[in-house]
Figure 1 (tube, helix red, strand yellow):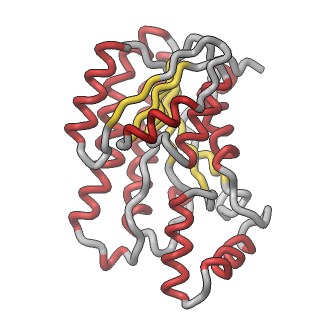
Figure 2: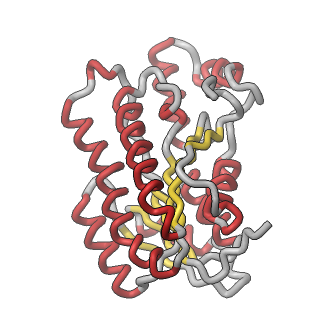
Length: 262
């Protein structure tokens, strides 16, 4: 199986913690040059230092806040002037705060749409030309199992994640002919700061302790535990590899079997 990413450059968003950082680490282990993108420069600097360099990889970082679209655009434009060749794009952005969809302010939908779909669109437009030139490209969007099964209490997220999935599928139809694939990885309950926030939200609404809520959630998962960020990252890394060249336009849950749809 060809998992070798030596000589490939990956742009990984939201990569100072959780699934994003775990993905960057996996791609580096496969030989890729990895550029981390996030808003906190101190965390970025520390994260870059943790990445494998045994194959002579050169790792970088870009400071950009995904809630500020122009800042993202300027930062990526500046980066591409110095490093124009990108073969892998991993779109990964934290979700909005939870709550019933009927109570969500319309501005929250607009902000979330901007952070996720609009930024994804810009990033894809920025890197696809170099992918076409290389005849090799991988775009992986880390979304949510809500694409297949809406999650109660995450109304805005459910809505926007679905839009991103549709965008991705359309992109896969257009770009496959150039050797570029576009896929979505759908994390379930994963041990990240995002899950901690969900546990606190459910704890407050139910009157149960976070531990009780966590145990109840685990009972709904066939493997009876939460997924590790590294497990989700392994799926992302595989989709970025040469071995996954014919996998295009899919929504891949990494959720321990919790999603009930096929």
